Length: 307
Image 1 (cartoon, rainbow, N blue to C red):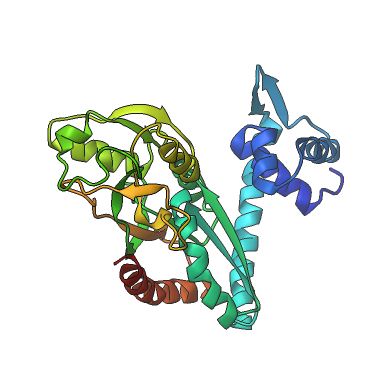
Image 2: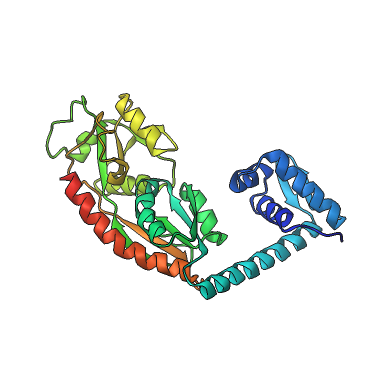
């Protein structure tokens, strides 16, 4: 076997894990031709085919399976080395890898700012993804810490709530219900709703609330981002339920109105999560402690600004 580079192994591992050159390219911020070229060069170095394609799906050959197992072991050892080196350096240098659910992008950067100012030598890698994406990253142990709104019951994880996550009903400002008080769920059920994809924490919470009161949500439109949902609400396509954290305090949401609905807001929490048994680096431990403390102040300031 000829010499293979660490970069080639990293590209191969991502392609093997996803079963797709396209998804590997998206994860690594590379072009698909670059991924294909790196895998081609690695295949040449190994001397055996690593993938076989059946239809549109990539499958590992026997050589590919062996290399994939070896790659995972190599990267686990390198991650352990990185943590050891970071511990030796203290907090002067290091990297913090965070993965957050899409809605958390509205407040996590504001919690990161003071931490970065306090520890300027620490580099931050922040991944923002949807519910299925963050579960995939958590399963593959790709990050130090994960911020999400619902703890996965099927995974063995350590979790801690750190911030309130109230879910509110939003309508366009000119909606007939905009000025009504204590709107009933049965009345709300008559309205068309815009929701996130199936599996999202917000959608599950809303459907559970309606089911508890023996009614259902009339989902007219599914959209993949909170910003798209807010634009759709403003355009009169329907109502929606979103985290209050998606509403910025700068007046950018002047086209939207929080409705006064019985049983709302739905009170939920944000959680910081990591795999049970995972050894956190000194950087990750320090950020976790900082996050729990900073969230208290953030929650207080957010409450006062929304009054």
